[in-house]
Amino acid sequence: MTRAAWLFIAPFGIFYILFMIWPVIYMIITSFFNTSLVRKGFGSFAGVANYHEMLTRPDFWSALWHTIQFTIYTTPPLVILAFVFAVLANRVQHGQWFFRLAFFVPFILPSAAIALIWTFIFTPSTGLWNSFQALLGDQNPLPVLGTPSIAMVGIAITTLWWTIGFNFVLYLAGLQDIPRELYEAAAVDGATQWQQIRAITIPLLSRTTTLVLLLQIIASMKIFDQVYLMTGGGPGISTQVLLGLITGTAFTDNRIGAASAASVLLFIVIVIITVARQVITMVQERRAARND
Image (cartoon, rainbow, N blue to C red; front, side):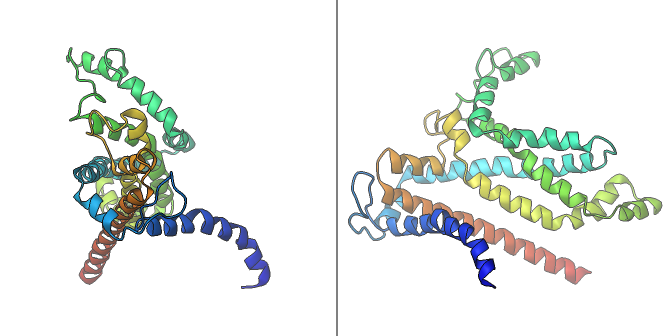
C-alpha cells in the first residue's frame, strides 16, 4: 500500500484501536486484578480468583441461563419471520419501498423509546395488551412485566417488533440478487410457489441465512437495554441477564476486575456458539456437495 492509502485509513485505524481493540485488551488484563473504580491503577493481582468467583456464583449461572433463554425466544422468530416477510414483500410489484420503510423504521428508534412504548402497552389495566386479552375473554390477565414466568416473553416480543427490520432488509437484499428467470423457468415447469421457495429461494439464500443467524445470536446474547429499561432485571431476578450482572458488579459494587472476568466468560460463550454454528454450516455444505 502507498503512503496516501495509509494516511486515508489512519484516522479510522486510530479510533478503532482506541475504542475497540484497547478496551478488549484492558478488559482481559483487569480480569486478573482486583481493579476497582474507587482506586487508581489495576489494584492487587488476583490471578484466576475473579473467574473462580463468577463460576461459583449462583446468580452468574442464573443470568447466563436468562441470556440463553432470551436468545432461544428471539432468534428463531426473528430469522423465520424476517424471511417470510421479505419473500412476501419481494413479490410486491409496486410500493415495495413502503414495506421496507414500515419494517425498518422501528429498528432506528432508540431503545429508550421502544421500552417506553412497550411498557405502556404492557401496563396492567390500561395497556393495549390487557385490552386485547379482555377482547378474547380473559377478564383477569396477568401483568406481563410483573409476572416472573412471562416477563422474559414480554421483553422478547418487544425485541421482535423492534429489530425484525434489520433481518428483513438483509433477506430482501439477498432475494433481489436471485435472477427472476429461475422462478419463471420453474413456473413454466409447473412448480408451485412453495416448490419454488423450497428449491430456489431457500438454497440460494443459505449464506444470507447463516449471516442473519450469527448476527442475531450475537445480538441476543448481548441483551441489556430492554431488560434494564423495562424490568430492571425483575421481578426478583427473573429477567436478570449477564450484561445486567456485569453492569451491577462494575458500577454498583465498583468491582471492575470481577465484572471483566464475567465479560470474558460471556465473550467465550459467544465465540463457542458462533464457532459451533459455523462448523455445523460447513458440515451441511459438505454433505450437500457430496450428494450433488
